[in-house]
Image (cartoon, rainbow, N blue to C red; front, side):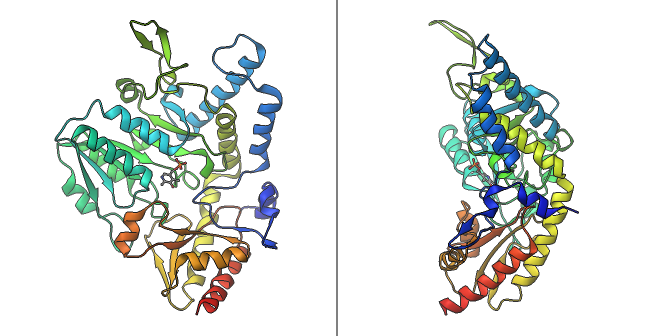
Length: 404
Ligand SMILES: *Cc1c(COP(=O)(O)O)cnc(C)c1O
């Protein structure tokens, strides 16, 4: 059992008032809140350690470098990567995906095929479309079902020796569906294809073991798991990362530079050009410590209770339509009520201090599938409470009445 009251005291923002009411923060799938323990690490960095890393001989630079590299080891351990240099620190999921897409533009050829899924976030669609335009490779899409799951039979029929890469999110940010990534990976490998899993929405709830999954690339952002914005990671199997060209040129990523030829640094620095988000990287490590201190399993089981309760209570509202009813879901509910526009519902909830997301959630193809402009999305975290869900339900009922 979680001591939610004690946990909430770690998050200063949760005692804020919004529009005169206690804040109810249900937009965790867009970004999570930050505990004092992580805020303290950022303040400590700028108060005590601030220096550029990997190059200074002076004390501050050495201490900052040690703290940054310790964070990389924490990330390595959390995801169970075999080597620390298989963890590339990036500005987030979006940059991690673009790094891989950019690298593969030199490897793919016309006629090669890529597979993505109908459940993807725009950041796991657009870079691959750009890659296809550059290389002449072809993009195939695993269709989705009415329940909001992937059609796995269709997936099998899309796979062929032409398939080079498969990109699927571990959890859909719009619907909360947990995708069967073990099966997706095994089947792709049978055809020699490599797999990138977008874990941005999974990592706040699930602790992936990249070696057990045998996944080729796994990407995530710190800000969805209690860390700061603007930092994230790319895990890649070392032999695959070594085969890819650098992403950006600049400082940090070189071994030697002359005007005739530059040689590149070893992993991970080959992919880390320029001064990184040093405080952010250190705070990413602190965020993982914080989550692990509570326990990922305890987090997942408490959030499952919140989801079950909210789903049951929402279903009592007349005209409610819930999108995405996969058996395996994280604590995300996408819904509409009758013909009410999600934006109107969301705005009235905001007046009551309840923060939800409205719109297409960066997943327009999913909205097109259901033939809707968008949904209201409430996404829960381990610091949310059953009382807050009661406020959401009461708020939705009141909003619907006001709109009629
Ligand atoms: C949030 C999210 C992203 C984008 O993450 P950024 O931190 O904005 O780069 C990508 N995919 C999924 C599934 C997400 O939930």
